[in-house]
Length: 257
Ligand code: IPD
Ligand code: CA
Ligand code: CA
Image (cartoon, rainbow, N blue to C red; front, side, top):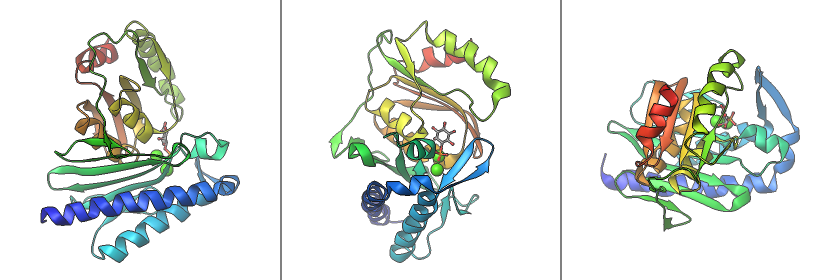
């Protein structure tokens, strides 16, 4: 694909993310219309509506592109596809917590090409294009590369849908307290990755994610200078460790024990 084709898609992703953000801000009442997808896994009327909006915009501009999205599925095997999560942080959206996002990524034969994560309530848009750096509202962002992580935050998310894994997780969480100041769990994988990318946190560790939860955020962390290790990279079960480059080894050792 010509570079312009990819950049055109990147611009479209940023435009759509802004439109989806504006839509969500003006339709927050949709949070009250919900159904249960699986145990401890919910969806609101807005999730489907926003995914439809994104798909329509993509197919209008690039009719033959493949799309894989959380709500309506699609291309799992293709190496050239859009990967979208219309609302990452649905439980936050339902609870009227501000930390929900719209996440849009594109993947080609060389891997993840770009990612855009919009945070409607904060009026923030994170984005990155492969080889061109990462940005927050058009300003370059970088991971916090201080060697000393003892004053930094780690974003740790217990396996809330796999309670049988909680004990092991808590043992690992305890080890994290040896190397960081405190932990947070902010309820959006995409946003957690962006917070590592811009240095608000130095580490993020979560298990059992899907590709649409983290595709956009992974590009953003890597382009901001950080590192991402997929401890398990099945598209439907991704265990992810993301951090500044300086802290990555220490983080992996902390997970391994
Ligand atoms: C969820 C969020 C959350 C993570 C869950 C994901 P959703 O995505 O990323 O932070 O802990 O595992 O499923 O359901 O809000 O799109
Ligand atoms: Ca998600
Ligand atoms: Ca979602």
